[in-house]
Image 1: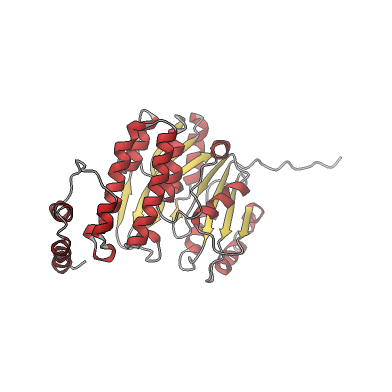
Image 2 (image 1 turned 90 degrees about the horizontal axis):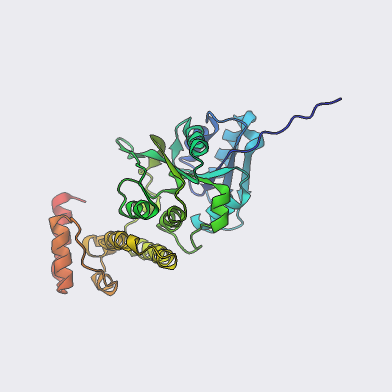
Length: 328
């Protein structure tokens, strides 16, 4: 009698967007395919109609890892739809018990997904959070993460970016939990997408574990990243995202999180009065920013005072002087 080999169940689905990353995709893909998890992990790349050679480079790298091919899928969008839609596409296609996102200009440690999955199983966790590195091209920051006692404290810490941070790529999430609540950002949300998903996630479960080891390399040196853009577009996109977070907080009755949300809004809107590229003091006043007890630098406090007193030109001259003094 012929024996039939039973395929191993997929434990982890890694979801990777592909758009404009020809300089980085090789490093990312190699770090994924060299994971210590073997047959029980899958990699889903969502090509968001990339205009460069990212896909060709990816396919070349895949050919170098024939043992991985059976668990690699590439899904193609006919047109560019943005990161929020790409992530939904990936989650819908996933077969794993847990899912995790990985940005294609970043890279990961070889044992990242094995360690996170082991923590998930040991703690019956809906969400596992890991530490990470911020990579600046010649220097590196290390970010450790801490488990907090309840949902509202966790959500507040995420909004304040304190003991636990906001990134989806540092979170392994039970797929059943992800799909049950249909966590997603709206298609038009092009900045702060992670807040829109991560804060609601943590407000819907206490089953969270932390692997306090830096396992992910966050590339902060990519000039094409939206996080490097400092203009009004970014701030308006951030406002839309944070408004969605506020709606979720109010709908699910978590008023204790609102002060942290106001703190986050204040800091996102601050470049409207402290950055020449996004200078729009009248828009800042329209947003009706509440007075908050935030430890701002002296020059930022002066800007707040000047704009509140409608001394827009004086404040702009201050920003020009600061630019010349600090050469940035």
